[in-house]
Length: 482
Image (cartoon, rainbow, N blue to C red; front, side, top):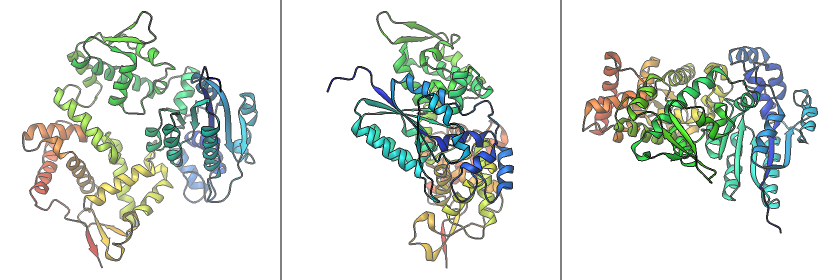
């Protein structure tokens, strides 16, 4: 077989997920309800009235309509598009009204007849992807448009065979696990705004934060003398997280993103090379002051705190820890209220209930995985009474009661945050310097350096010391009830 000069691309669109995700974000509950799987409207609970209320509380993103052209344009950036398919139950008007646009862009429509309780689109798309993997060696990149966690294993298989996976998902609907598994992750809304040239206010804010983070990275002593662009992108992904992508900041190319930050870096094209070199225009002290002014964690502190933050983020990532204190408190408040309303519950009950009521979380509903991790921390933190008869069941199926010690939400949140600090206790170095440990704990919790916050942090650290010395911590232990 002749060698392939330019790798080809497969564009596979879970069109139901795309339309429902975008229309749900814009508050079009009628479309979202029609496109929902059998059993109720998307994000609704029971009945259309609840769906309408929930939709009214979600952010309006009317400036990001369903636009097939931007998806195909993205795919073409990665090579020649050899296969492009959109999967849906085309009998539904919520989807079939887009067929003309799909035909115009050369996208084949694949009809998948829906069945109650079955996500047939996911299955058909996954089967087609596997066929392309083993029958079309020329296809080296898969651009998949979805937000469904069910594709985790598919992505892993594609990558194990040397393929590149690019994920596009409506904002807020992508599983965190899915976003971290792919090679490149882009939200649909930012893709559309980038192509249309309409950056959002949030994108402008994120670009400002990126500018500061870029300054911190390039002024590190280890990078004296400059960094090549490819290396810089690797370092930025380590600093900002694996889902970092220039497209999410409104730029089609990484080089263009860096060139938009002339206040902090110089960009020079190397003679005879495709890569470029970036050198700082600010000192490390100036970079830290800039980052501190924007509220970046530990930006004006010592290298030791910067290093601690990086290690703490890595360790707490598996628990889906939310570093934004306001956002974290909202999630914990909703969890607490849900569990207090029930006499007994299982973790699965709580997750299912909250996934049916996304309006409770405002503009960004946590994934089932994130909710599961929050509950796991609570379980490990001895916050529940467990039914004795359920001790042989899987943990998430055991019936639980919230312990009486947590009579108010503030006590519940304090216990959760104590547990989070306990998971990084070794990094806090409690036995060496209490003032330093308190500073690091404040950075993890995102609290201010005031008298009340200092007292709160030191109380939590005191509880952690009790546990380390074998004394009972606040809340006691996980107990069984007969």
